[in-house]
Image 1 (spheres, rainbow, N blue to C red):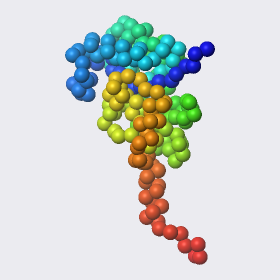
Image 2 (cartoon, one colour):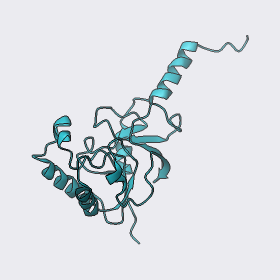
Image 3 (cartoon, one colour):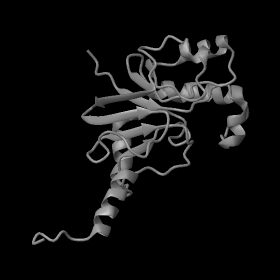
Length: 194
């Protein structure tokens, strides 16, 4: 049996006219964007692979368009709901229940999956990585958090290995960890004699 790969993505915004301007996406039209996103997705993702979509699947698509795009995508798709995922998106045949936040472990990496970037999450003082979308590549990663949206990853889903590689070069601490470290420094040394 072939090994199943797991991929992550967010913010595809299929059929969303405004995203072309807002994110300066290099597509001539929504139709061109939809076609290219599907092609890039299917070039990486196999039929049996799992894809965690961290929200904002489509916006402005008719139910038939959204269903057609969904059917064209390889993989077993899981959704972590984003702010633009309305009833038509939620009604698509996702491979599992639609969630707002997921805590899981994949390929030895503990993960918190949410559409939104978080300032703190369970495991942020350890090694748990928070994956998010929503910001369309506006926020830099920390050593334990990463935007997996298409605008951050050349318009295609990404693997744990690619996320690990990206985070390996990041020195910025998660905010909660950084603030706790600074508070400890400000408190100064503890006088054990007192």
